[in-house]
Length: 349
Image 1: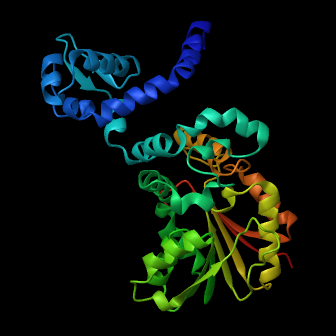
Image 2: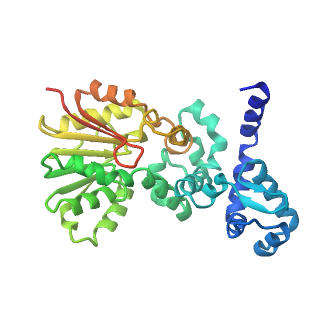
Image 3: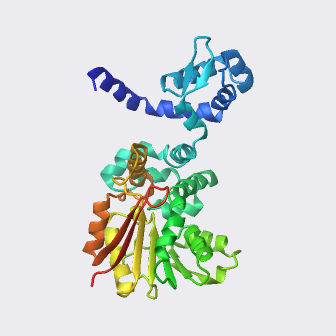
Protein backbone atom coordinates (compact mmCIF):
# COMPACT_ATOMS: atom_id res chain seq x y z
CA UNK A 1 0.00 0.00 0.00
CA UNK A 2 1.34 3.40 -0.97
CA UNK A 3 1.40 6.34 1.43
CA UNK A 4 -1.42 7.94 -0.57
CA UNK A 5 -3.58 4.81 -0.30
CA UNK A 6 -2.80 4.49 3.41
CA UNK A 7 -3.81 8.09 4.02
CA UNK A 8 -7.11 7.45 2.26
CA UNK A 9 -7.75 4.43 4.50
CA UNK A 10 -7.04 6.59 7.54
CA UNK A 11 -9.60 9.18 6.41
CA UNK A 12 -12.23 6.44 6.01
CA UNK A 13 -11.84 5.75 9.71
CA UNK A 14 -11.82 9.44 10.62
CA UNK A 15 -15.15 10.05 8.85
CA UNK A 16 -16.69 6.61 9.48
CA UNK A 17 -19.57 7.87 11.71
CA UNK A 18 -20.70 10.32 9.03
CA UNK A 19 -20.82 7.67 6.33
CA UNK A 20 -22.57 5.19 8.61
CA UNK A 21 -25.36 7.71 9.27
CA UNK A 22 -25.54 8.68 5.59
CA UNK A 23 -25.87 5.01 4.62
CA UNK A 24 -28.68 4.52 7.13
CA UNK A 25 -30.44 7.57 5.69
CA UNK A 26 -29.99 6.33 2.10
CA UNK A 27 -31.68 3.10 3.08
CA UNK A 28 -34.35 4.31 5.50
CA UNK A 29 -35.43 7.24 3.34
CA UNK A 30 -35.96 4.94 0.38
CA UNK A 31 -33.20 6.27 -1.87
CA UNK A 32 -31.50 2.90 -2.35
CA UNK A 33 -34.84 1.24 -2.99
CA UNK A 34 -35.84 3.86 -5.57
CA UNK A 35 -32.55 3.43 -7.40
CA UNK A 36 -32.85 -0.37 -7.26
CA UNK A 37 -36.21 -0.22 -9.06
CA UNK A 38 -34.50 1.23 -12.16
CA UNK A 39 -32.00 -1.18 -13.66
CA UNK A 40 -31.09 1.28 -16.38
CA UNK A 41 -30.47 3.99 -13.79
CA UNK A 42 -32.51 6.91 -12.53
CA UNK A 43 -31.90 10.64 -12.76
CA UNK A 44 -31.83 13.22 -9.98
CA UNK A 45 -35.24 14.76 -10.66
CA UNK A 46 -36.94 11.38 -10.88
CA UNK A 47 -35.33 10.44 -7.57
CA UNK A 48 -36.55 13.67 -6.02
CA UNK A 49 -40.08 12.86 -7.13
CA UNK A 50 -40.01 9.24 -5.94
CA UNK A 51 -38.45 9.95 -2.52
CA UNK A 52 -40.03 13.31 -1.71
CA UNK A 53 -36.67 14.64 -0.53
CA UNK A 54 -35.33 18.12 -1.29
CA UNK A 55 -32.68 18.46 -3.98
CA UNK A 56 -30.22 19.62 -1.33
CA UNK A 57 -30.79 16.59 0.94
CA UNK A 58 -30.76 14.20 -1.99
CA UNK A 59 -27.48 15.59 -3.33
CA UNK A 60 -25.83 15.24 0.10
CA UNK A 61 -26.90 11.59 0.32
CA UNK A 62 -26.04 10.71 -3.28
CA UNK A 63 -22.57 12.24 -3.02
CA UNK A 64 -21.95 10.28 0.17
CA UNK A 65 -23.13 7.14 -1.63
CA UNK A 66 -20.88 7.83 -4.61
CA UNK A 67 -17.67 8.31 -2.64
CA UNK A 68 -18.40 5.33 -0.37
CA UNK A 69 -19.02 3.07 -3.38
CA UNK A 70 -22.70 2.38 -2.71
CA UNK A 71 -23.87 4.21 -5.83
CA UNK A 72 -22.43 4.82 -9.29
CA UNK A 73 -23.33 7.36 -11.96
CA UNK A 74 -23.17 6.81 -15.72
CA UNK A 75 -22.39 9.23 -18.52
CA UNK A 76 -26.07 10.26 -18.68
CA UNK A 77 -26.04 11.31 -14.99
CA UNK A 78 -28.20 8.37 -14.00
CA UNK A 79 -27.64 6.62 -10.69
CA UNK A 80 -27.53 2.87 -10.07
CA UNK A 81 -26.48 0.66 -7.16
CA UNK A 82 -23.09 -0.98 -6.91
CA UNK A 83 -22.77 -4.49 -5.47
CA UNK A 84 -21.92 -2.87 -2.12
CA UNK A 85 -25.11 -0.82 -2.32
CA UNK A 86 -27.09 -3.96 -3.08
CA UNK A 87 -25.74 -5.61 0.07
CA UNK A 88 -26.64 -2.54 2.14
CA UNK A 89 -30.14 -2.57 0.66
CA UNK A 90 -31.06 -6.24 1.00
CA UNK A 91 -28.43 -8.46 2.64
CA UNK A 92 -29.76 -9.86 5.92
CA UNK A 93 -26.39 -10.06 7.69
CA UNK A 94 -25.64 -6.43 6.84
CA UNK A 95 -29.10 -5.34 7.98
CA UNK A 96 -28.77 -7.16 11.31
CA UNK A 97 -25.32 -5.70 11.95
CA UNK A 98 -26.33 -2.15 11.02
CA UNK A 99 -29.48 -2.23 13.17
CA UNK A 100 -27.46 -3.61 16.08
CA UNK A 101 -24.87 -0.87 15.70
CA UNK A 102 -27.51 1.85 15.31
CA UNK A 103 -29.96 0.83 18.02
CA UNK A 104 -27.84 -0.94 20.61
CA UNK A 105 -24.33 0.46 20.33
CA UNK A 106 -24.04 3.81 18.55
CA UNK A 107 -24.81 6.23 21.36
CA UNK A 108 -22.95 4.25 23.99
CA UNK A 109 -19.80 3.92 21.88
CA UNK A 110 -18.98 7.51 22.82
CA UNK A 111 -17.92 5.98 26.16
CA UNK A 112 -15.64 3.33 24.65
CA UNK A 113 -12.36 4.76 25.96
CA UNK A 114 -13.82 5.02 29.48
CA UNK A 115 -14.85 1.38 29.23
CA UNK A 116 -11.31 0.32 28.33
CA UNK A 117 -9.87 2.27 31.27
CA UNK A 118 -12.47 1.27 33.87
CA UNK A 119 -13.12 -2.32 32.74
CA UNK A 120 -16.85 -1.57 32.91
CA UNK A 121 -19.50 -1.12 30.18
CA UNK A 122 -19.69 2.65 30.51
CA UNK A 123 -21.78 2.95 27.34
CA UNK A 124 -24.61 0.96 28.92
CA UNK A 125 -25.58 3.97 31.03
CA UNK A 126 -27.36 5.48 28.03
CA UNK A 127 -30.05 2.83 28.66
CA UNK A 128 -29.96 2.33 32.44
CA UNK A 129 -27.90 1.74 35.55
CA UNK A 130 -27.26 -2.00 35.32
CA UNK A 131 -23.86 -3.63 35.87
CA UNK A 132 -24.25 -5.58 32.60
CA UNK A 133 -26.70 -5.51 29.70
CA UNK A 134 -28.08 -8.92 30.69
CA UNK A 135 -29.71 -7.65 33.89
CA UNK A 136 -31.41 -4.92 31.90
CA UNK A 137 -32.17 -6.84 28.72
CA UNK A 138 -35.87 -7.35 29.40
CA UNK A 139 -36.20 -3.62 30.22
CA UNK A 140 -34.55 -2.19 27.12
CA UNK A 141 -36.72 -0.18 24.70
CA UNK A 142 -38.56 -2.51 22.31
CA UNK A 143 -36.64 -1.35 19.24
CA UNK A 144 -33.32 -1.85 21.00
CA UNK A 145 -34.38 -5.24 22.32
CA UNK A 146 -35.52 -6.33 18.83
CA UNK A 147 -32.17 -5.42 17.28
CA UNK A 148 -30.29 -7.11 20.14
CA UNK A 149 -32.15 -10.42 19.79
CA UNK A 150 -31.98 -10.38 15.98
CA UNK A 151 -28.22 -9.94 16.19
CA UNK A 152 -27.88 -12.65 18.85
CA UNK A 153 -30.00 -15.19 16.98
CA UNK A 154 -28.59 -14.49 13.52
CA UNK A 155 -25.20 -15.84 14.52
CA UNK A 156 -26.46 -19.05 16.15
CA UNK A 157 -29.69 -20.25 14.54
CA UNK A 158 -28.08 -21.58 11.34
CA UNK A 159 -25.79 -23.82 13.39
CA UNK A 160 -28.54 -25.45 15.45
CA UNK A 161 -29.67 -28.23 13.04
CA UNK A 162 -26.10 -29.43 12.53
CA UNK A 163 -25.28 -29.09 16.21
CA UNK A 164 -28.27 -31.22 17.21
CA UNK A 165 -27.15 -34.00 14.88
CA UNK A 166 -23.82 -34.01 16.73
CA UNK A 167 -25.18 -33.65 20.27
CA UNK A 168 -27.82 -36.36 19.91
CA UNK A 169 -25.34 -38.90 18.60
CA UNK A 170 -24.81 -39.52 22.32
CA UNK A 171 -27.69 -40.63 24.58
CA UNK A 172 -29.30 -37.45 25.90
CA UNK A 173 -31.95 -37.68 28.61
CA UNK A 174 -31.47 -34.52 30.69
CA UNK A 175 -29.89 -31.54 28.97
CA UNK A 176 -29.00 -28.34 30.82
CA UNK A 177 -29.20 -25.30 28.54
CA UNK A 178 -27.02 -22.77 30.35
CA UNK A 179 -27.78 -19.24 29.23
CA UNK A 180 -30.89 -20.42 27.40
CA UNK A 181 -32.02 -16.90 26.53
CA UNK A 182 -35.39 -16.99 24.71
CA UNK A 183 -35.54 -20.80 24.65
CA UNK A 184 -34.81 -21.32 20.95
CA UNK A 185 -32.33 -24.15 21.53
CA UNK A 186 -34.62 -25.84 24.06
CA UNK A 187 -37.53 -25.72 21.61
CA UNK A 188 -35.39 -27.07 18.78
CA UNK A 189 -34.17 -29.97 20.93
CA UNK A 190 -37.67 -30.92 22.06
CA UNK A 191 -38.82 -31.00 18.44
CA UNK A 192 -35.76 -33.00 17.43
CA UNK A 193 -36.10 -35.61 20.20
CA UNK A 194 -39.48 -36.52 21.69
CA UNK A 195 -38.17 -37.71 25.06
CA UNK A 196 -35.37 -35.33 26.01
CA UNK A 197 -35.92 -33.14 29.07
CA UNK A 198 -34.42 -29.65 29.15
CA UNK A 199 -33.57 -27.42 32.09
CA UNK A 200 -32.87 -23.80 31.16
CA UNK A 201 -30.51 -21.96 33.52
CA UNK A 202 -30.52 -18.17 33.24
CA UNK A 203 -31.40 -14.89 34.92
CA UNK A 204 -35.05 -14.37 35.95
CA UNK A 205 -35.80 -11.89 33.13
CA UNK A 206 -34.56 -14.23 30.41
CA UNK A 207 -36.31 -17.23 31.97
CA UNK A 208 -39.61 -15.34 31.94
CA UNK A 209 -39.26 -14.74 28.20
CA UNK A 210 -38.26 -18.36 27.54
CA UNK A 211 -41.13 -19.72 29.62
CA UNK A 212 -43.62 -17.51 27.81
CA UNK A 213 -42.30 -18.73 24.43
CA UNK A 214 -42.36 -22.40 25.41
CA UNK A 215 -45.60 -22.48 27.44
CA UNK A 216 -47.76 -22.77 24.31
CA UNK A 217 -45.84 -25.77 22.94
CA UNK A 218 -47.02 -29.37 23.29
CA UNK A 219 -43.69 -30.30 24.86
CA UNK A 220 -43.80 -27.54 27.50
CA UNK A 221 -43.87 -30.04 30.38
CA UNK A 222 -40.47 -31.37 29.30
CA UNK A 223 -38.82 -27.99 29.92
CA UNK A 224 -38.02 -26.71 33.41
CA UNK A 225 -36.35 -23.51 34.60
CA UNK A 226 -33.64 -22.71 37.14
CA UNK A 227 -32.88 -19.14 38.15
CA UNK A 228 -29.18 -18.46 38.50
CA UNK A 229 -26.77 -15.54 38.32
CA UNK A 230 -23.61 -17.12 37.00
CA UNK A 231 -21.61 -14.01 37.87
CA UNK A 232 -22.12 -15.03 41.49
CA UNK A 233 -19.52 -17.73 42.08
CA UNK A 234 -21.36 -18.92 45.18
CA UNK A 235 -24.36 -20.05 43.14
CA UNK A 236 -23.89 -23.73 42.30
CA UNK A 237 -25.07 -25.35 39.09
CA UNK A 238 -27.52 -28.12 39.98
CA UNK A 239 -26.66 -31.77 39.43
CA UNK A 240 -28.50 -34.22 37.20
CA UNK A 241 -27.44 -33.38 33.65
CA UNK A 242 -25.97 -35.93 31.27
CA UNK A 243 -25.48 -33.15 28.71
CA UNK A 244 -24.59 -29.49 29.24
CA UNK A 245 -25.05 -27.02 26.39
CA UNK A 246 -23.77 -23.44 26.05
CA UNK A 247 -24.40 -21.56 22.82
CA UNK A 248 -22.72 -18.17 22.39
CA UNK A 249 -22.77 -17.94 26.15
CA UNK A 250 -19.21 -17.98 27.44
CA UNK A 251 -18.23 -15.06 25.21
CA UNK A 252 -20.49 -13.01 27.50
CA UNK A 253 -17.96 -13.38 30.34
CA UNK A 254 -14.40 -12.47 31.20
CA UNK A 255 -11.78 -15.18 31.59
CA UNK A 256 -12.02 -15.39 35.40
CA UNK A 257 -15.79 -15.73 35.14
CA UNK A 258 -15.52 -18.43 32.47
CA UNK A 259 -13.15 -20.39 34.67
CA UNK A 260 -15.63 -20.11 37.55
CA UNK A 261 -18.53 -21.30 35.38
CA UNK A 262 -16.55 -24.24 34.02
CA UNK A 263 -15.43 -25.20 37.53
CA UNK A 264 -19.05 -25.27 38.71
CA UNK A 265 -20.11 -27.35 35.69
CA UNK A 266 -17.25 -29.74 36.45
CA UNK A 267 -18.51 -30.11 40.04
CA UNK A 268 -22.10 -30.71 38.88
CA UNK A 269 -21.57 -33.55 36.37
CA UNK A 270 -20.14 -37.06 36.43
CA UNK A 271 -17.52 -38.60 34.16
CA UNK A 272 -20.13 -39.85 31.68
CA UNK A 273 -21.63 -36.42 30.92
CA UNK A 274 -20.69 -34.33 27.90
CA UNK A 275 -20.32 -30.56 27.77
CA UNK A 276 -20.79 -28.66 24.49
CA UNK A 277 -19.58 -25.14 23.79
CA UNK A 278 -20.79 -23.48 20.58
CA UNK A 279 -18.88 -20.30 19.76
CA UNK A 280 -17.98 -18.18 16.71
CA UNK A 281 -14.23 -17.98 17.38
CA UNK A 282 -12.83 -14.95 15.58
CA UNK A 283 -9.72 -16.77 14.37
CA UNK A 284 -11.64 -19.66 12.82
CA UNK A 285 -13.57 -18.01 10.02
CA UNK A 286 -13.74 -18.70 6.30
CA UNK A 287 -14.14 -15.08 5.24
CA UNK A 288 -12.50 -11.77 6.23
CA UNK A 289 -15.94 -10.17 6.71
CA UNK A 290 -16.80 -12.66 9.47
CA UNK A 291 -13.53 -12.05 11.26
CA UNK A 292 -14.00 -8.29 10.95
CA UNK A 293 -17.52 -8.45 12.42
CA UNK A 294 -16.52 -10.69 15.32
CA UNK A 295 -13.65 -8.44 16.40
CA UNK A 296 -16.11 -5.53 16.17
CA UNK A 297 -18.48 -7.48 18.40
CA UNK A 298 -15.74 -7.67 21.04
CA UNK A 299 -15.92 -3.89 21.25
CA UNK A 300 -19.66 -4.13 21.93
CA UNK A 301 -18.88 -6.39 24.88
CA UNK A 302 -16.35 -3.87 26.13
CA UNK A 303 -18.57 -0.81 25.92
CA UNK A 304 -22.18 -2.02 26.23
CA UNK A 305 -22.46 -5.59 27.46
CA UNK A 306 -20.18 -6.10 30.45
CA UNK A 307 -16.77 -4.44 30.06
CA UNK A 308 -14.66 -7.59 30.32
CA UNK A 309 -15.62 -10.20 27.71
CA UNK A 310 -14.87 -10.70 24.03
CA UNK A 311 -15.11 -13.02 21.06
CA UNK A 312 -12.41 -15.51 21.93
CA UNK A 313 -9.64 -17.20 19.98
CA UNK A 314 -10.04 -20.99 19.84
CA UNK A 315 -6.80 -21.49 21.77
CA UNK A 316 -8.00 -19.23 24.60
CA UNK A 317 -11.22 -21.18 25.11
CA UNK A 318 -9.59 -24.60 24.82
CA UNK A 319 -6.96 -23.63 27.38
CA UNK A 320 -9.64 -22.54 29.86
CA UNK A 321 -11.38 -25.92 29.53
CA UNK A 322 -8.09 -27.73 30.17
CA UNK A 323 -7.37 -25.51 33.17
CA UNK A 324 -10.68 -26.52 34.76
CA UNK A 325 -10.18 -30.26 34.37
CA UNK A 326 -11.87 -31.03 31.07
CA UNK A 327 -10.50 -32.83 28.05
CA UNK A 328 -11.41 -31.98 24.49
CA UNK A 329 -13.17 -35.01 23.00
CA UNK A 330 -13.73 -33.42 19.61
CA UNK A 331 -13.93 -30.11 17.79
CA UNK A 332 -16.33 -29.55 14.90
CA UNK A 333 -15.25 -26.51 12.94
CA UNK A 334 -17.70 -24.20 11.18
CA UNK A 335 -20.58 -26.63 11.42
CA UNK A 336 -23.21 -26.13 8.78
CA UNK A 337 -23.40 -22.86 6.91
CA UNK A 338 -22.45 -20.87 10.00
CA UNK A 339 -19.57 -19.14 11.76
CA UNK A 340 -19.33 -21.58 14.64
CA UNK A 341 -17.09 -24.18 16.15
CA UNK A 342 -18.56 -26.80 18.47
CA UNK A 343 -16.30 -28.06 21.26
CA UNK A 344 -17.21 -31.39 22.86
CA UNK A 345 -15.80 -31.90 26.36
CA UNK A 346 -15.91 -34.29 29.27
CA UNK A 347 -14.15 -34.64 32.58
CA UNK A 348 -10.55 -35.65 32.16
CA UNK A 349 -10.18 -39.26 33.25
